[in-house]
Image (cartoon, rainbow, N blue to C red; front, side, top):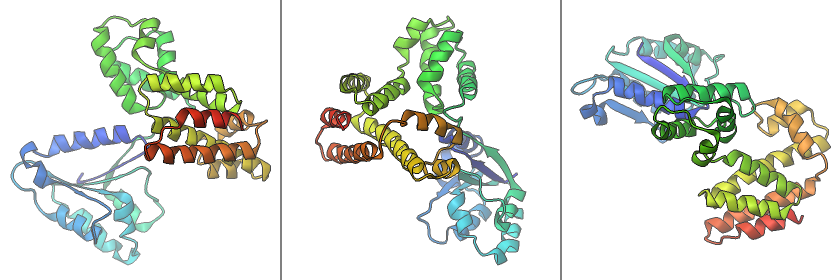
Length: 319
């Protein structure tokens, strides 16, 4: 089938699939001519996509024309052109592939999307929700099997907490573990030395800041820095957490429905709201708002070359 639609929030797995498709179909020596990626900056992107995908490849191998669904489909808003689009899709040469990618599935209620889906081979790359422990256990097991690393239950539990739903990190860590293990079983003490658990460190840091435990917060910051976590990454993570807390608290005080709060907070799993509410039960909006303001100031300071990470963390703990 000459049309492929790949979509999903697991960008690492999606990109791996793209690379596999390209390597399988496009001759290495002719890749510069036969792998065409058209971005949103292109004018008349739909016309260029169909012109390229109708043009036969140069030299050996097949040709892939790759575009983003949002911009391609957005440029095909005129439903009157649907028959023309169908004619184009049905006439793509067998040597050519139209690859459409997106972080979400296109709206299948639209006529033009229905037409594309009629001709497309679809594959979804969903990101395992961070709350889905069983799903993350399966993810860890998948990469352990790929890299032939044997795991004990306690090591699996540690990796579930340390890696979470990060597929890129899972692949990278297991590639490293495969070299280290060399078919032997890795012990719990060894895994703690080999794979850092930043997820737990961040959780301890945010809760320490929320509860005004400055000494514990600074200890966690030092631990993250010692593990080569960049200050800007630390601030970005803290900002995301405090933003979610602020939206949740403000929504509760405004007596919004749980569905509305989850929508505004962009929670992929509304069930997480129960735990968020419990975490900020005794925290006021003012503290969360002021904390978020200081974090945004800290981000600006870091980007301008001033490292006030420790002092700003302490300041937030005293609010």
